[in-house]
Image (cartoon, rainbow over all chains, first blue to last red; front, side, top):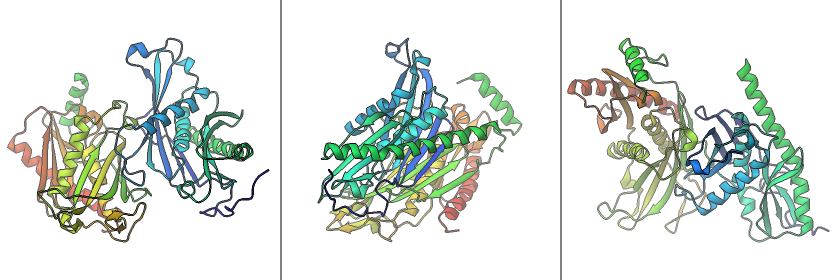
Length: 239
Length: 263
């Protein structure tokens, strides 16, 4: 049973299950082995993949499989106040959950003793930056030719005063007079496996499950876009 | 470095040929995107060949320096992002990126590009603080020149945030730009063997003997310089390098003006 919500119209006029406008590109960073750009609303992420390459120091190497190393970073001008360069507790945590979000689809067994480095840089953010980073990173890995079992998509879903809303923007995240929950989700949409799940805010079990149900087809559509962009890129290369 | 590569490079340069087919005094194709980033007060993405640099401006208020109580302050930073090149590693800024930021800073500061007096709010108490970050998205050499263009373009594109009770209202933009009155641009000339070239690629920079960055104003006056590299320069070198830098800076300035709709 859902409680009635006071949030009947979204601040930017979107439907409740409608993500913001998405732009995706592959091969945007020429020096990288693979790269991608993923923009959703006013949140924009670049991802570059370097590797598989030698992992140093050597004692970190695993002779059975490669290591996936992700680094998430917000550029100093990508938020409301200037962000001091260098890692923060927040960026370290996001880097870690990004790794976990991608690991289930990457065939690291193919790269013993090696490291696959993924660098994610946000040029502007308006909520949903870790999800944009994961979408860009998954595309960059595929662009680099890293063997993958499947594609990963990520988008945040949310509950604003008991109303499920897909892809909260910054204004929605900062609504204070009612309960707001933000639930970043990454999924392998073809199998339904959830590879990233976090939540901040209060929801009922039913609301949570409904939020996941609502976001699943959105994630499927994001994967379709990621695949289409990658296919298009390799079509161009062949010509 | 690979000595054979350098030998090959010098041999070609002696015949007037660069490995990517350019003339010695030729920049790679340049494109400039202005103000595309929503969170920055001003921004620019400049692409020059494969080098792609983003500059973003954030503004805040601060206490003025004791020796210049009526002047707004500015701060330039740069980082060699590991995203932008396989040779860059994580970690605190190294001397290379510190030099990039400082040389770009000195061109703009010493060229009096910014009217710092107009950035004073209460003398001795409160002034505007302009923070400029210059970051490569893809690094293939010449970060100072391309970063310098990006920084200047971003400054010119910026809109000041709203000020209320001596505090910046987060996320606001007024119609007012940053008070600017000059367009200094850095141009780097490098010397490989006996050859002087502009807009070096990463490979050319790896093989340079000496380099000189010259920040040039619109009237052809010079406002900052920085020599780099291990080899020395002669006065004859300097003469040629200055001529090159002055000529090239005009070309680059036209591109910046066109991107800003000032041409």
